[in-house]
Amino acid sequence: MTTLPPSCIRDYGAAFLAATLAALVVDAVLQLALDAVAVSAYGGGAPWWITANLPERGRWVALAALLWRLAPSVTSRGDGANEARAPHDAAEAWRQTGVAVIAVPLLWVLATWMVSALRFTLLGSWSTDGLVFLSSSYYRTLSVDYAPWLMAGVTVLGIRRHLV
Image (cartoon, rainbow, N blue to C red; front, top):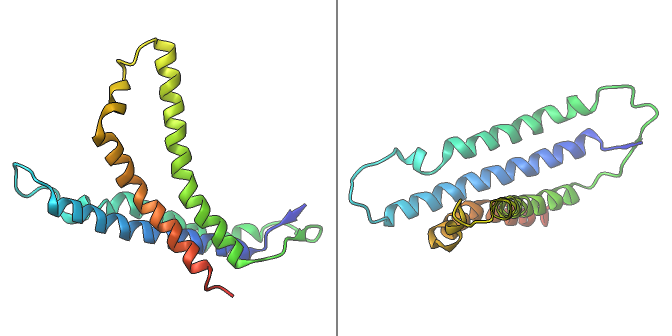
């Protein structure tokens, strides 16, 4: 059985941490910019850090930091004498993480659409939630939710090019 060395796991954790931080920053800037140009009848609203989705994205940053910190101790458990070590390539770890950060949200949307299609088929009607697909705000929300992850993945892929 081939295992990844702790330093490789740490590279995946560092790449994921960079991606979550980038997503947090992009989402905060995007939400604050959209909030600044929003036309609404009421003044005030939620505090800026709520509007910028910092609590939601902060959970991902905390998870990534925990993975980065705990990965070496978790992977070093056990005998390890009989296990071969896979070759370590930090740039490849960052590339795979960047691609995953871009692809997984798209797969999530696709899975959501598949479940919706199944529900429409079983019920024989679009009236459950089908009209949402005709709303431009639905696609706007999808775009605004996906943009931070897309930019985070691009950022991680850009950083990867500078790794030796």
